[in-house]
Amino acid sequence: MNKIIIYLGVAILIIFSSCEKVIDLNLDSVSPQIAIQGNIYDQPGPYSVKISKTVDFYESSIYPPVAGALVIISDDHGVVDTLVEKSPGEYITTKIVGNPGYTYSLVVTVEEISYTATSTMNNAVYIDSVYIEDAVFGSGKQVTSKFTDPIDTENYYRFIEFINNVQQSDFHVTRDELYDGESVEYSISSTNNDYKIKTGDSITIRLESIDEGVYDYFRTAGSEGSQSASPDNPISNITNGALGYFSACSYRIYPIIVP
Image (cartoon, rainbow, N blue to C red; front, side, top):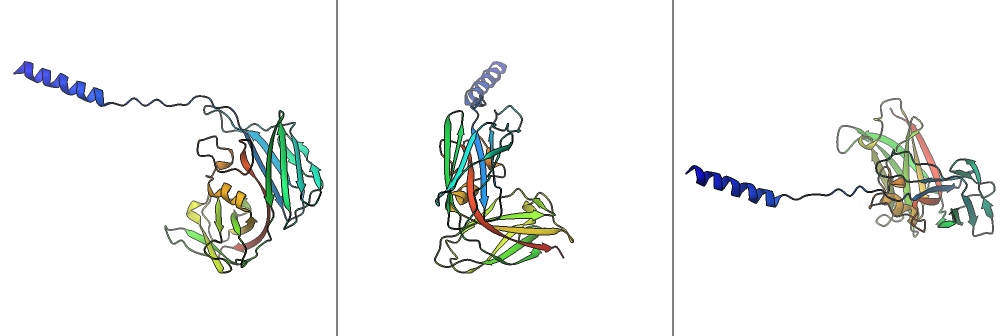
């Protein structure tokens, strides 16, 4: 009887051992990728383009700046601007001006490799009002912006929330596919903020009118999507495998104090 029990025990161990699955984690080094973030606004310049490189999985999350790049921005009205390197990895315009209706092209050359992007600046859309109310989900507050979408045009929007002059890290984008020409209310819940709002806080909502390429980038981005080297990188509007985005957009702001 004891021998039968031993044989059964050994058989069970063999069966369970054969069912184990060994999972190999592929954490090999990844080649650094260029990350570009460039913005032009319908506000007075100068505007900036920031260039950095991603790092390996095991390294720190500090992305080294890329110095010595050739950065050129031009518009479809003949203006060509070669940017000046203000600090390592940060390049500043000297003469380009942001005008709604213009299309802008970016060319960045690093180590003889060129990365290009285009973006069209759409007309600004004004915010009609902003108000604070209890969040629909959870116990926090939400900030709701009301605006009127222009009729018969494709519009793409990005909302940026500033609390006490500090920009919040979440990405908020929408398009007018379902509400063309209508009055729209868009809410940002405080449960997603880096900071929970309270009475007396200063809130500023910035409504950016972006183009489809920039919308696709932020729609697919996470909170740190701009420099992620993961397989699910957001959709970039920059060629040649660069991460990041190039945006020409107009915007309007609406400030309030939390009651």
